[in-house]
View 1 (cartoon, one colour):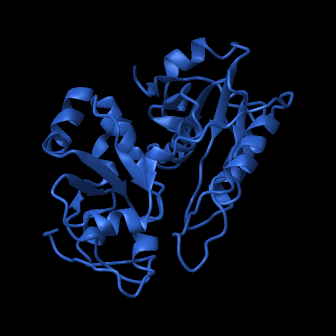
View 2 (cartoon, helix red, strand yellow; view 1 turned 90 degrees about the vertical axis):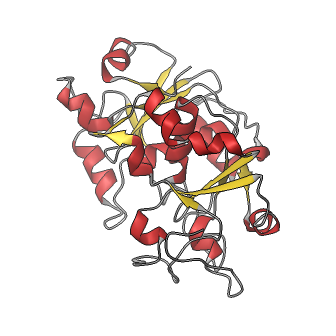
View 3 (cartoon, helix red, strand yellow; view 1 turned 45 degrees about the vertical axis):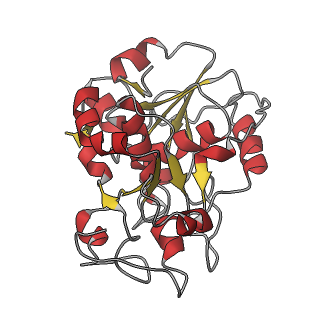
Length: 278
């Protein structure tokens, strides 16, 4: 079953009482821009979740730039927004799914399987001619019972132990120039985790939408040669996009190194590679 939903299909479900739509638009350069855009116009019935305020906790010395919030508190936040265990959730952004993927992953991490990403996001919804609104919806509070799927995530120590393990494939979702260490606009050091290959999340898309499953299977064919796949990016946000692409390709079980490069390079003894070679 696909993790994606088309605007036309979502439109037919708008009146479903179990449906909850989540807007996660965000701008890393202007953190207030996403919420402002939501207030101006969003999908009917959409609730806003902010990357910094709702989907992350303030960073520390280690752990990356977007550590997970307390997940029990996040479950309460979901319930307050009217999202329960029986809700069907659709999440979107206007960044090709980069931020929506984070919310999608977090719900999956909490054991909620009924969550889809709006393919093409806000842009595709408008292009299809469907209405948007500035009306802020309210829903009755409910209970969201978390069932954490701990096996979906790994930490730095796990990756360090298996750096030389040929059965583990690390996939870096950042842009190629960051992977190669040619530029690093955000984190303290440039480069990538040794042995990692580079498959930028943007390569999953064509004109803002996910490529067909067959193309994604070809893109991720290298995963068939290993026992385990671990995904990372800069701060554990865009790597979830690669996880969605893998599942669309029929490849399941990949894990997320949540701290990602921003956690890895925060340690002085971290091994670092540059260039094209892992």
